[in-house]
Length: 304
Ligand SMILES: Nc1nc2c(ncn2[C@@H]2O[C@H](COP(=O)(O)OP(=O)(O)OP(=O)(O)O)[C@@H](O)[C@H]2O)c(=O)[nH]1
Image (tube, rainbow, N blue to C red; front, top):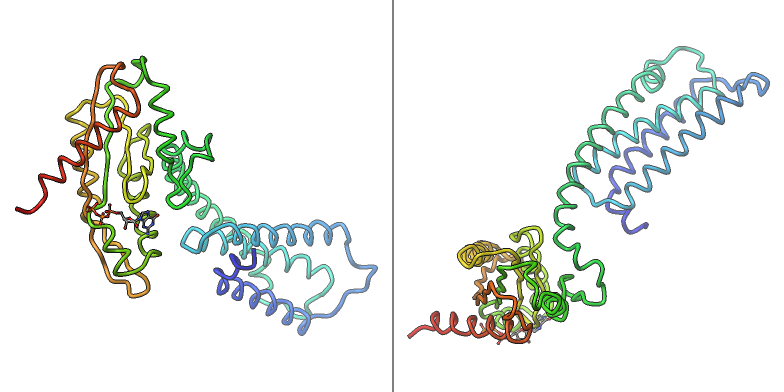
């Protein structure tokens, strides 16, 4: 939790400085009220609300990455907290002369905070919709955590075989295509920049491929630098288009080597197996066909 809060150090320092300033200024310029004058119901209500707002702020910062949406949420909750805090403080301290900043904190800080928080929540909602779209593509996998590949967080090939087995002799997802994808010259990345950079590349490529697929498509890691993509309800020509789209996406993706930031561009080769007959869906055979097509497409690319 502290590690995540450290990401938001500047925002937390700003709120702490404003909070301490208002505390010091109020104590400096005000007089303590007699205990008999304190309205304890207000203290509990306003003080409790200030504490709850501070807790929400910490929870949000501890669970979110740094970025614009988090900034809006922090500013909103921060101003609301300052308003409540000042209200609670005024129960104990009476300012001798009316202070503009005290008035401002009590009267404007709350509506301003609510406005900023609402704006932040609206953008959080849009962000969440985009994330949900991504998760939908992985939804099939969530039920089978043991079949997730640890490096790329997509399914292992066993999962794809299981899906194919469930389709044998069924026309549910027909016509069906299987793309076998292999990264060209991947070993060079390992050799020149180290295994860790190779791991990063595989992880980022899996994300990139996933982003370019449709809801309901399934991508799995076949092993090494090879991925398999199952495309249900897909005509052969559409599968070829998707394969070309994936190749383009990878071709224009600038992978950044760490720590230099140097850009590296990759290419992928793709083999396509396609069927509209449920009898041809024997997993091993269907996968073998896609692998054969991949080998064939690589032969075409070999320089003379
Ligand atoms: N970093 C990393 N490398 C891996 C992983 N799994 C396999 N590899 C490496 O991936 C490479 C795959 O071999 P090849 O398919 O022959 O490599 P390639 O350079 O892409 O050759 P072509 O496929 O002929 O273009 C090997 O060097 C493996 O050591 C992994 O999880 N992480």
